[in-house]
Image (cartoon, rainbow, N blue to C red; front, side):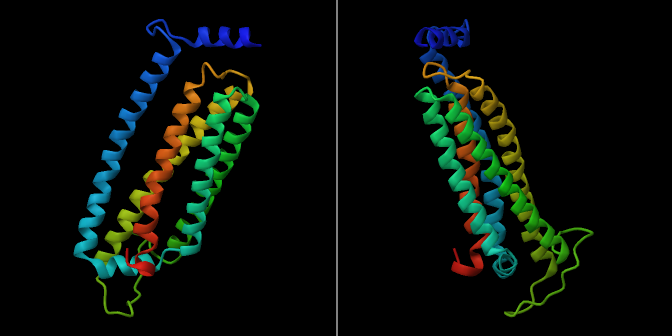
Length: 227
């Protein structure tokens, strides 16, 4: 068995790397560089959010009142739990338990689909209540604290749909990556000597969770805690 895992590791070692550790470190560094570009990308959106929130706080507070606190919190719990299962999956790959790795990644994938399903329910509710900016905007409610210009409220929902939509796109990409990794894990491709793809996929999924951790309070909790 040990000899077999060594053969698998040698087959996975690319010719331009001297050792598996060097190959793993290079892949990890590349992934971190990619994640930094993603952080810069989302950082621009967060900056726009904070600027407009400062300028139009009543509209932001009113927009947050139309977020579902229960669904948003449920999705937060789901993503945090999925971050735990993917971390356990990476550990299982490191100690040579490919079947366990595959099962844990499959659980992560199911939770990812659960997150998207709940997000779809929220989008549907916004559509029903006329809160989708553009030609579908039919919201004419007057805030109890005073009139909020519709264009300012629409700006909140523009940013809401862009930020959560891009996050959902990253979740979908992550689900595709994890599905491939889980398939190969079930086939016994990963060993304690070679589990770099599992590690890299785990880093990506943690990034997806991290972005949501920032989105959740900024979008859902304004009307509840004034964060």
